[in-house]
Length: 260
Image (cartoon, rainbow, N blue to C red; front, side, top):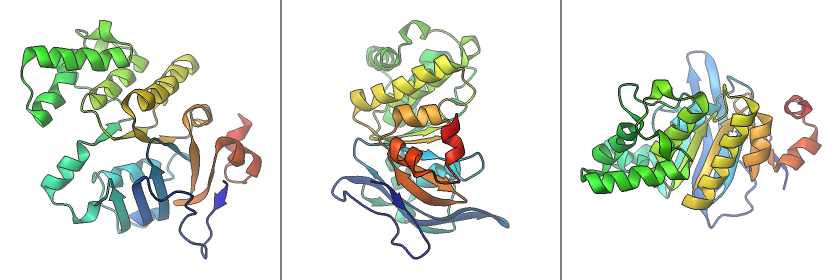
């Protein structure tokens, strides 16, 4: 159901409250005099793909980095998987992060490691797994799930942009997170590869039963991957609904997205 937010309205319309895995209220963040987030409210529900749609520089990436403690907001509330993020110790925050998969815009692969070594790294560092047979099994399963088992011994420099995105997602999935955060997953990719990444996001949700937040300004990605979309305008969640609801709403700030 289409919902809009005004200065006098309740934070956000909630149709479901029993299966919320992320809840954010009145989140604010500024860098110097530049206000990036200005009272953001959102809920992410279990098994939902939630798209945050907005132009570059509107605070989309800042929002999800606040969720995992990479950026400290100025004020507001963030609850993830029942935990108040602001009250967690460093150890507790690290434990929570193991349940959140972060797919970075640039894939963030280690150039000096092969694909296999890139995927083994979080298993060794975070889970203390060093047994070769177990490592091989988990690495190959993750690569199979992104369609790149054949690339296991390649170096990042040998991979295309789309392959790097897939490997980055595989490295995240190998820890079996409950929540996936995708930061501009189709940025810099051609239309065919973008379509493949969008289909992979849907496949990941089905195979791993994840709840996902997808940050994008790519309207094709929003249409393909979303159950629900929030329009982030001037640091606020101005409007939300399904793709068709937002398209038909003809909101002046979002309408330009639907022309392409």
